Image 1 (spheres, helix red, strand yellow):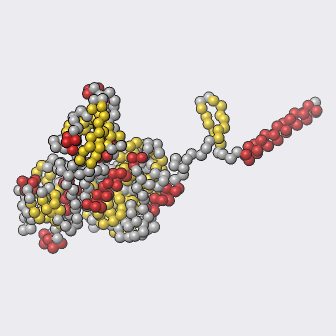
Image 2 (image 1 turned 180 degrees about the horizontal axis):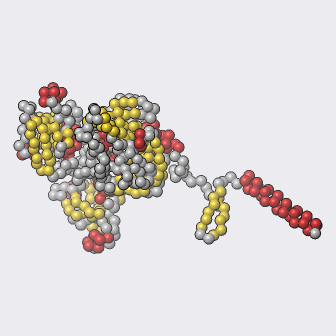
Length: 486
């Protein structure tokens, strides 16, 4: 009996030594990571996998290091028009623009957001809603240096704005290409949520070409990149970057019932940002081009109704007389498939692509007519159906809508008790003259929105449609109101 026990003990000891030795040999010889793979009821087994390529690896240290120093904290101050929180009810931005803090004795509202340095000499991209109506814009860098920023230009139709601080050799984020962005790829959101400066969060691209109906106006451009990177109040105007540290969007909005992050955030594609910022820098205003069509998203119901075989592209429901599309030979019932080499499958995607052009530019549009594809080359026009560009300069007269406008001088402001304003220097005809307005009239507000400069006036009117209310004062102090259609 003792011999039998000794025999089994020896077997156990030998097996244990062999197993231990085998494990140690495995550790020494295996040079690759080991992954456990489970598939239904199949027993677990070991699989040696090669590491994922760098562009998809979820190591974001390099991208964060490249971008966190180029995202700034934007703080604004503006006069409080009334008591109470104007953002408390029905805030369309989902609380993404930092909550105002009231200083009742001074009747001043303070709020904050983010911005992205796009050049080493101090140009900063942000959201229009971050700095709109601000009387003072302050910038704090990641190294805590503070500056007062100058507003170079704004574009409400895309919710973008361009700021400038007086500094050199700043870190900046390089532009990427939002057309190359793929659903499912990793991204980082960089900003200042809840005044927590230099915050980086990670997520993936959830969708592209989202129209969330957040902007106002018939000529708005909404084709957002949707991500699940955590974005909260204060992230507005911050950077959405890929794992190479390239800017692919400006964070702008969240979908939330509470005002805080609930899994859905939206960024303006960088290809729109490049166009708008370039226009603001060169012209002082955005040069918007149109092809002159009314469009509908193509779905199964419309396809069945019109006898369309494939559900792709954007349906042309109508054409503007004398518009670019009509002159190029487009017809009602055509289906727009591409702008250049980029496929478009929704109204928002089409608007995004056309929004990159200026009046006078050529665009090649691929259409489907019946069973045949055709390429149409068209010269794009502005909303007035011509190719004229508008240039806005701070201290120079601006020609717009058959009028010549100029900023009110400080002397005129003091005399009339104004805080800015735009004087009609010359009337050549058009809507203003037809409404009964005379030369010398100073525009102080449009649709109850304060007008301080020629830039404000062009911003307020260039994307306006239907009726408009203009308020102002004549040099003799007589106030007047005019309403007319555009």
